[in-house]
Amino acid sequence: KNEVEQSPQNLTAQEGEFITINCSYSVGISALHWLQQHPGGGIVSLFMLSSGKKKHGRLIATINIQEKHSSLHITASHPRDSAVYICAVMGADGLTFGKGTHLIIQP
Amino acid sequence: DTEVTQTPKHLVMGMTNKKSLKCEQHMGHRAMYWYKQKAKKPPELMFVYSYEKLSINESVPSRFSPECPNSSLLNLHLHALQPEDSALYLCASRRFFGGGAHRDTEAFFGQGTRLTVV
Image 1 (cartoon, rainbow over the protein chains, first blue to last red):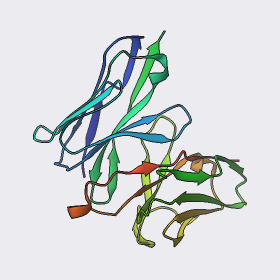
Image 2: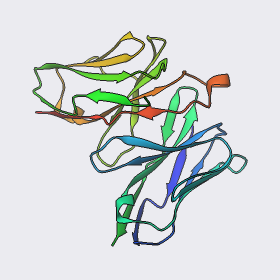
Image 3: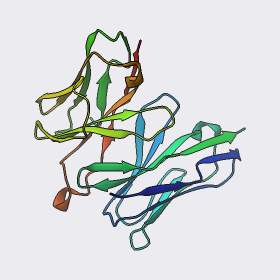
């Protein structure tokens, strides 16, 4: 079973700061999701990555399959980015989730 | 259409009630998932359906009964639940189930049903 570790667990930052959330996993995979969940809300898939780097607006995700590591970056962070960010790895029977990073961006 | 639609959004039920949660997608996905999420915890897999057949049951109590009547619809029937079953129930779908050639298929999530058992 894949172990998925995220860091940090909690992060509070000021508006405009550059944010990095890290994810590492124990067993080789072929794809990884970065997910966003607002309080009490459903889950939105931000990225699915197999290799390299993807960018959507102010969000950038990278993955290094050999090192079993992925990062999610938020540039020019904004209070509306406040949410839980979850890393999830794709296995044969579905997703294994990390515990999430609770991000708060203060104005 | 890249949506997974779950209804209802909120549900309050008594321990003797019978209710159902519904999940619908029209993306032609043949793998559908039920997850349970408690507060401040990651989602936990409950059931996986592949081509309308139950592929995985993660030792879920029988008071939860899944059903996949067609390729677009996934139900979760609830009966005699306990207060500790109160949680967010999430549905997800993928084009296919499993690894191999189908491994790189993105998962899409619904907004969830917030269930409270009283």
